[in-house]
Length: 270
Image (cartoon, rainbow, N blue to C red; front, side, top):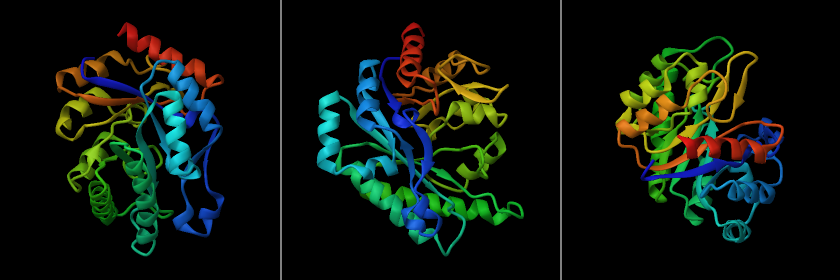
């Protein structure tokens, strides 16, 4: 894995959610982990990772100075922040982009190289063809926001959005210039082959979320546990000449520190 640097997402150290005020104020609707970021960062560092990714809500909870101190104390680099939006509704798009801009500015202030977004709302009455064009245009706006602040922007296909399976993935990346952040578990859960998608979209992959998946009962797992072998994914990244940050992610695990260690142990063997 020469040329790869390993980060871990801080989202496992508490329940996942969002700001409730966002129900009535779109510009305040951010992702967050309801947990202690100082504990998360310390345990991520002890597991041997060099970097950390955080949700936009958790990032903005801290002042830039306080977050900078926490990163220095733990020896971690802030690699990315994760945000998102509906992205298909013209009336609220400016509010969503304003929120993403705030997160991008803070991430850039702290030296992060990447901005990741997910989204693309599913309508109550079904997805329309034009929703993909609107999502693609919004993602190009996100790319502009990121690049203006020295960040590289990525779209993360995600279950519960209009971009889940392989056909959706190819459709959206034909409609936008933003980079592709493959989440290996989400892609596999939607019926995709993560290794194949990495090869097919190799020129768009500059940041990766690695995660394990158990299909029955549905759960995300540490790497190479469950039903999606990690080895072929790592081989695809090697074959395509990937270099840069790989972020290991695990949305929930009884002992978050153990989950981080298990994935690191696998990566050392691999």
